[in-house]
Image 1 (spheres, rainbow, N blue to C red):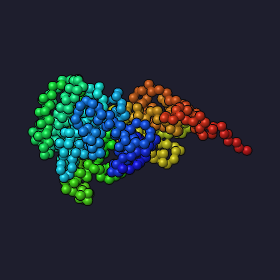
Image 2 (cartoon, helix red, strand yellow):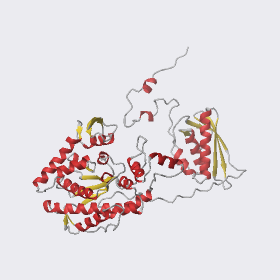
Image 3 (cartoon, helix red, strand yellow):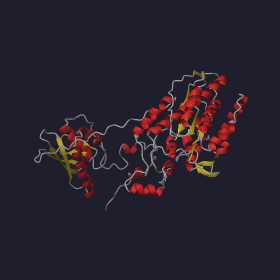
Image 4 (cartoon, rainbow, N blue to C red):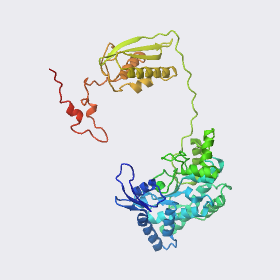
Length: 489
């Protein structure tokens, strides 16, 4: 075991956490979040607070199961852990139990089908005893991507879909059998309906398809269930972090790298299954290969559709990939073009706004020349005008630029002189697009710009507004500075 100061998040005050030495800081932070209170959170002590009452209720109910031993073992092997409502004895929340699929795989022995099936029954029993009145529980699976990587099966392939469907069938069948047995003790809440499909007859994992078939066959003998909802795929939470999960639910791996820049456990498992070392993978990557394939949204979508018929509660269906639209061709301006030059002054700073038009009179080019600004500011404004012009020539409507850049607020700003279409502007960009909106779109509906005094340091209305999440102090340095006066002799 090791001791570490950890908090539920970077903003939370840290507390002393005791976890196994092999567990990372993410697990320590997760335990700090799961265990109520602000004092020391030790895994052995905290887990006993919910395991002991469950075991005692099992004895009183006449269940001859070594529940305490099973739950301690599942937690230490990181096979599974309950969600926050169980750790915190919260009877208002939905009791849940997260099963880490990747932890049931061993490189030498493969996927432990029997241990997974037993874990499902243990989780259902534990949740029922933790919240006897609950008719909805959520036994969820997570880190499917980590399991597939360890098995050497590409996420999104036909083989991976078969594995996922078999696992979901075992989850559903074993959960319904356990719920049916508990209904005899605590009363039934729903009829048992075999409304889920038969699992695949074959899967690339020894014993997996047979276990799925047996689980479904056993579920046919169940007449009623203690629960209306049993199985789920949920968003990752603190229980996932406690178990060392890298990829939540049935989602594909997000990245082959950890937060510190090293290879993730999933990536290392994939390379090991392929018989590749990190050095070999690096050489393959440098030569243009792809040793760590990254599945896309379509693969996630296919996996979601494959698992959904077996599971009671699922997250929202991933959005399918939209076909990338072809870029609009650039509409070239005529070599000899019409347009005009507008001279104006914004807050005492002169500028020249020049436009270029197509033969139909529509705007296709904007140039902004400044009179006395610095070289860096002039360069930024020149390149900004070029970007806007390219957008117009590629079909971006002028209305989009007007909506984006009116009311931008920075100096110089103030009264506009020399342009009857615009009286005030909050910045040079605000003036530019107010002018273009009036002259090319005929828009006179844009609200008047709010004028502030020329010297607005600490004196503007927005400077007095709350700076969330903290308010400005009552006497800020800016406010004090307004009291000084410059005196010359």
